[in-house]
Image (cartoon, rainbow, N blue to C red; front, top):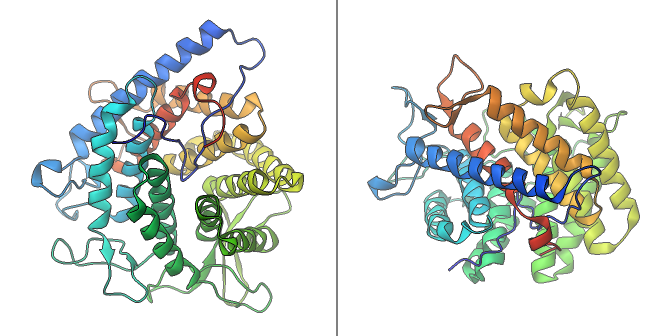
Length: 389
């Protein structure tokens, strides 16, 4: 049975501690929180109604709705992971969260179907191995975010098998660390797939830093803290733009892909906040705050929040809440709430409860799961839950 106090976030194990911002009454904050809770429940209900395939016995999901003739029978791993994160967030809601504990266990069962122990080292395939699917390449970023979710559920349940599996996943991830290219040695490869030009990616390296730091908090093994710092510093050194944002990847010749995706900044905000939480060194806090401010300034102008994939926004905003938990600043939650309000008004179909961000595509599981996560995170009562896990 899951404890009610599940901790929200993309692998961010933190209860919200936000103090009410200037000019916001207690009554107004309570009303807004209740509205977010209702939105989370409605959005999750729609996710389950239109995407969930639990009736077939496998507890899996469709990738998009309506299902297209060319679609796989089930979603890829990343989509399932985000549905899992949404479910864990629902289980942490005040008053109603305990009712989702069985759903969390179903998500754990579904994730296990993607585990491929025929590979060395073993890990989660991007698509279901036989007999349910044809298998797929191992993506290290997918494995990092699944590992983060295993950590969250372990904290809530005490199920040691989940922590053991998370540690096994981390062994896979560090096997992707490489000291090339010479001008920026280190970093983590994106995938084992041989179909692409090899790159070291910000997302997998920064997310894996968070993964390592949470493992350190859970096990107190120094190697995890060392890895968390190493991955964090590589990303800061090699992938940070002059404006304080984070570029996407670097190839083996040292060429940098300077695309800006908001979740890369979010992962570095979260890693910096965790390093501050663990070490007490204010340098990490200041770095996290600087990244948060740079990202909010850039993506908060010109409508850029709304041209990012919603799941990237969810990762960013939930990492802002992690930063807020170690050093409160009302602007983090305010930015997240403004985004959530706009999406509810402009991108939601009231007749179905589904969010459509591209009128020319079917509704995506990733997008629905992202909004469940955002509304659920905002619905947590910081005064009741206050403090860190």
